[in-house]
Amino acid sequence: MREPKVALLGMILESNRFSRPADENDFRSLTWLEKEALLDEARAATPSLATEFAAFVRAMDATGPWHPVPCTLAASHPAGPVERSVFETIAGTIENQLAAAGPLDAVYICNHGAMVAEHTHDPDGDLMARVRAAVGPEALIVSTLDLHGNISPKMVDACDLIVGYRTNPHVDMIERGEEAAFCLRRCLASGTRPQLALAKPPIVPASVSLLTAEAPYGELIDYGQRRQAELGGAILNVSVFGNFIFSDTPDNGVSVVVTARSDLETAQQLAAEIAQRAWSERESFVRTLSTVDQAVAMARDPAGPPVIYSDAGDNPGGGGSGKTTELLAALHASGAQDVLYGSFFDPDLAAEAHRLGVGAEFTAVFNRHKGSAAWENWDRKFDAPARVLALHDGDVVGERGMTSGRQMQLGPCAALELNGIRVVVISDRAQTADPVFFHMLGLQIESARCVVVKSRGHFRAGFSRWFAPEQVFEIDTGGLTSPVLERWTFEFIPRPSFPLDPDALWKDTGQG
Ligand SMILES: [Zn+2]
Image 1: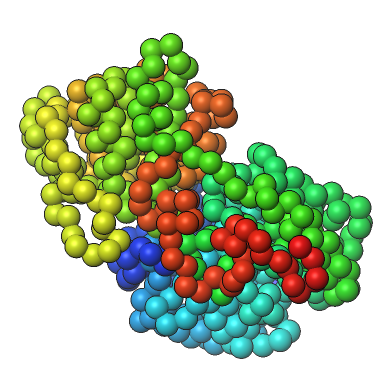
Image 2 (image 1 turned 135 degrees about the vertical axis):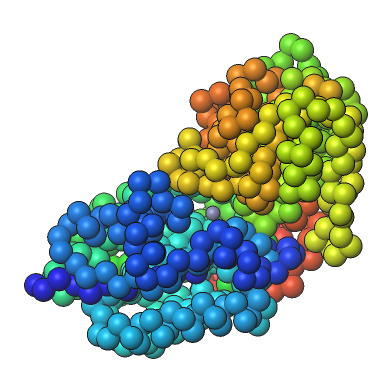
């Protein structure tokens, strides 16, 4: 066949309903690439954009001639609902680019899947529907999504293939981008029109109970892969999405999306089968955290093994501010020694450290400009005598785990010594999932008794070289990503849903 013409686009945001709105600068400062600049970045040695996007482009490059039509890819760090005007700007730009492109064979949409907008619960679905309207019914639309996506019927209706991550921590973005490309190639070559089915058992797990190295979630994903293999070529993809509870939308809940080569009934049966299995395992989708007191005691125990803590209430990767001080203040007050703490998002403090220079001693004031909005409740002011240990410009390439090989710009960074606690201060609100946050400042992981990271789970992949699973603890701290669900008032999540409603029945299928 002639070379396929494939449009490339996406809008990536994981929205935490309780966090501050995502504005234009949130996208401009991370990823906002159009046309040839987008394609060039995807083909760069260490791309700064979403890994699966680059992998899709490379896989298409490697599998024969094609005619890429790069449109727009915009991505923000996780934040609150996107402002309506920003969503309209990006979606409208994409529509215009698609109209200008003329007839297309396919579209690749690189989204996250848990975006909320100020004006709608399902902007991912809206964008996909608008892309479908722009390109017509003939073009194949393939999409990759994060496994924390909240999958809506609208998204499934608009797409011909949905490929979700299968790892949490997320380390399979290259494989999923490639899978989407290979699958698209096969569909185009054979004239296949895939069929999608969606099943949604009413389970809304917190992200801490969605690790794929263990049951129940990992087992469920493996089961889907086994069933796909058993069904031979009838099934193109099985994706089991865990949801992002803090989006608080009517589409929250575990979502099983099955893409069949051609037979809708086969897709529906398998989706229902996996959804039933998830429902029967629902009691396992809960997890107990360690208290701050327990964390302090372990950090001060000279006989204990080295430990790594997730500051679970403040994960910038889930919309957290990156500025809560609860665990830092508790460890500091206890006199704990040999602690690495990363990373505190405070551009003012980083700038001050850069002005003062390495070796300077001063009073470090965290959150000097604390605001009064609800989402800043936990960003308490904290000060302590400090010494500037090291400085860095924050231009780094990820070393391990989710951001391995990815270019990151963290802005001016500093390492501060606070009486035995070495604190990394950064100027971009990023989660500390990669050891490069410490290494860039000369801090060695193996020298610490206790490492604290503002990351919910992705740090497990980045730090697995130093910490076995039994040395990893999630600490129950306050903040915008606290996984203690009883503390939140969810407004839009369908009820009843387990575990918010422990006695929930799944009425749709008469189970429970
Ligand atoms: Zn995710």
